[in-house]
Amino acid sequence: MRTPLIAGNWKMNGSAEKIRAFGEAFAGARLPGTLEVVVMPPFPYLAEAQRAFAGTPLAAGAQTLNPEPAGAHTGEVSASMLAEFGVTHVLVGHSERRQQGETDEQVYRQACAALDADLVPVLCVGETLEQRNAGATREVILRQVAAVLEPLEPARRERLVIAYEPVWAIGTGLTATPDEAQAAMGAIRGWLEALNSDLAAGLRLLYGGSMKAGNAAELLARPDIDGGLIGGASLQVDEFFAICQSAG
Ligand code: 13P
Image (cartoon, rainbow, N blue to C red; front, side, top):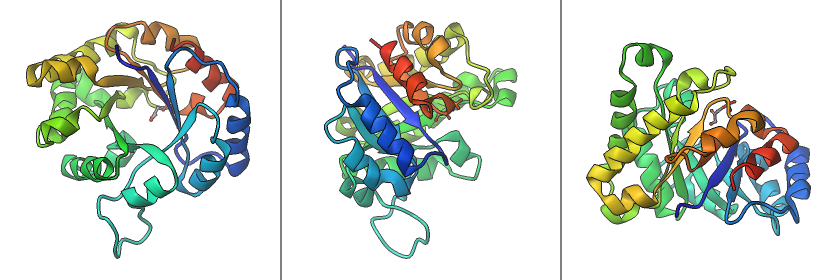
């Protein structure tokens, strides 16, 4: 059985006060079974998250990283720096960063750096509306998955999580229907199956794109949806908590 995972990507939002409020709200919270919950705030709040999430079911995640270990990279943050602040998960290849020029090759290098530091890379893939309308959804997402999974040593592949986030559903209020999400995520699982059946059975796939308390349960009920990557709805503690409750 795959452990469900709910991750909140705060993007460039939040505050130290909001971090503390999430820590307080989740302290002593009763969450379903073995659910894992990760909150991914902007870098400056990671130290506060390390303090505020201690003793709660919340783990802290980051939204990106630079694949180099150190050096002259102004404004960048390395995997070991994230690990030093208790980060357990890091997004790689979010579409908002791919749109700014991040390539499959860079995303692969980020995933490797994350794995070297014992962080779980959450590989984000997804098609634009144009690509969907052109019938290219499957081709696009499988190319993005293959660019990272194929060159990785087999033993390291199983430590990844993959998030399917259709670009047209991000921040738009347009959610993929459960059928659309399952079709895309079933294609990813099928691709993994061809690579290695144990990997396909164990690797977690998250859905992201306007997921909220009102639609989480029906998405999470689909066989290939093991959790969610939540943007806007992860900024309100009650809403995020309700999504976690539906992941049992
Ligand atoms: P929204 O939930 O705001 O659509 O964002 C999804 C997302 O991009 C999470 O990484």
